Image (cartoon, rainbow, N blue to C red):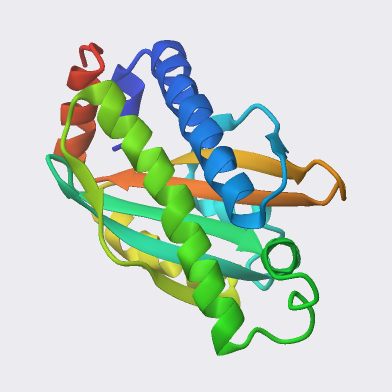
Length: 207
């Protein structure tokens, strides 16, 4: 996969992926605003192709507790997408959705709410990607885990380790207007090797 990315004009790819990230984040912010019934702003998404080994550091270290919501990508493309956020951001998100509930330990109710939020936000990204590429792309039902970053990332690492050592990351900050509370989340888009080529060709990028 490293050789594959090395053949790509990364500036062109990042520009296209950033545009997808912008549109997807806009749709996700709109969906989140409807859920919490408040205006939600967002910062410009940061899109990067990174060495997989450096990702845990970005999340605060391998032993930092995070919440990960995992989906399979199905249809014209195969792969996975993960929405990962710190426990602090997860509690903030729950509290925005259900005031007074985002404290203490995660319970079944709060985890179910997080799973649904991840489903809606990830669905917004995949819908944007599907619209821009013209590909039929769907996501599976979500799987959620709260664990150390190293353990959460072992899921895509096992799959991604089969095809390379780079990963595409879209970083978003969602900010609720009135309370000024910020939720920082990361999307990890991990198409399989054939799907990368399908996606880039659909976007008009020759590899």
